Length: 362
Ligand SMILES: Nc1ncnc2c1ncn2[C@@H]1O[C@H](COP(=O)(O)OP(=O)(O)OP(=O)(O)O)[C@@H](O)[C@H]1O
Ligand SMILES: [Mg+2]
Image 1 (tube, rainbow, N blue to C red):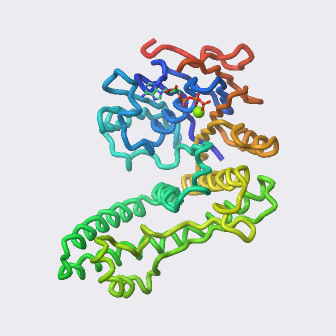
Image 2 (cartoon, rainbow, N blue to C red):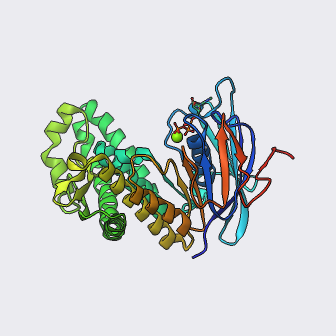
Image 3 (cartoon, protein in one colour):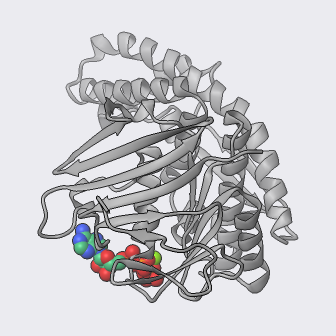
């Protein structure tokens, strides 16, 4: 299968990254350097430029301290053509352009990149919100309609909560109708997607050498059939609490490893393995959906992993058309090796690609 190709990444005033352009070859680019060198920042910038997405809520964090605005640009080959994707960041503001034309996040290709990072363990050990966010982000990328329905649903929940707080009992049937319609759509979509997601995660978990079977299930606070009745029966409680207590915004993606909930029983490394399996499944689902393999960004291939699982990650990187892998030690088998230091990235002598770094405007 062909893949998305990030040919160049340019940044200006992005966190600690020195301004400039990096060119990336096909295959694996390895980035190594000591703690604080800027490796994660580079992947974060690449993910943002490729997808328009970031999970940082205070966008000014991304802007180099002392500066007012930051900029990232990706030159991306996708679907047989080259496009220039630009993201400008200011105080609480994100502006996207594709080929020079203003765009919204939804206009960017949705299957361009998958980012695997040590923090993914939080998917396993953290609260349900993180797993919901994983599922919602993935499904929104697989289906624009899901993203739209989810946004409408979330808006409806907050408006309904405001009405509950104001004690507007008389208005509830209107909010309930809207909520049930949108919520039912979301539940049905999640249920349909879960079958394939479960298969792929389970497969990946086994390929990672785990002897315990991984199972994904939805723990739902209600069902499409009973949603309206559940809302009605909890009306008094909701008015008292001023919040909507049932619906897909309260559901969980339960991860079971062997017989037990992974979050409570898995070891750190087992947990990271489960998280890896979820990311691998994300990669496969996006590739199936869009017919191209996303660029794979792997942050810190050594973190918390034993040699077998590191090898899995490196094999995964080698199996996709393009990957960028970081580590505090050099990445074996890279087509291009970059040394990260103080936000600068210098090609190593043994790299097969030369002149990887050029100045912006050069
Ligand atoms: N807005 C910002 N302005 C300036 N510097 C920043 C900004 N945000 C983060 N940094 C700095 O960027 C540096 C590099 O961070 P980064 O997380 O990329 O390091 P890393 O190479 O991934 O390190 P590690 O190996 O520990 O994961 C940090 O020292 C951090 O303080
Ligand atoms: Mg890092």
